[in-house]
Length: 62
Ligand SMILES: [Zn+2]
Image (tube, rainbow, N blue to C red; front, side, top):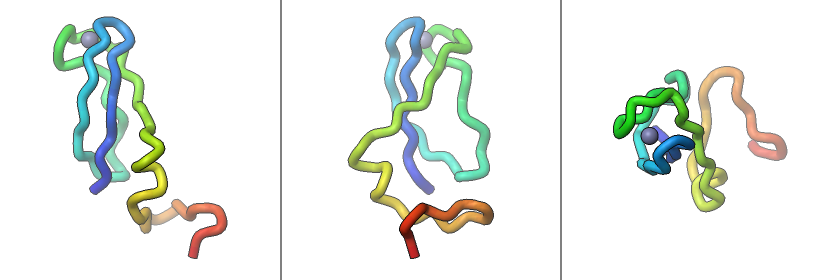
């Protein structure tokens, strides 16, 4: 499972969490409970894991 990073736009809380590809993105901040989370894509991770789920093919990939 890939690790996703989230940042809360309200309180600035950042955290990483393991999620399945099929999981819905988180919205609720665990710190302030605001629905202000946004997913942060880290450059080092965006190409670092293999995605083999149905319906997902990386351009130029295998
Ligand atoms: Zn927050």
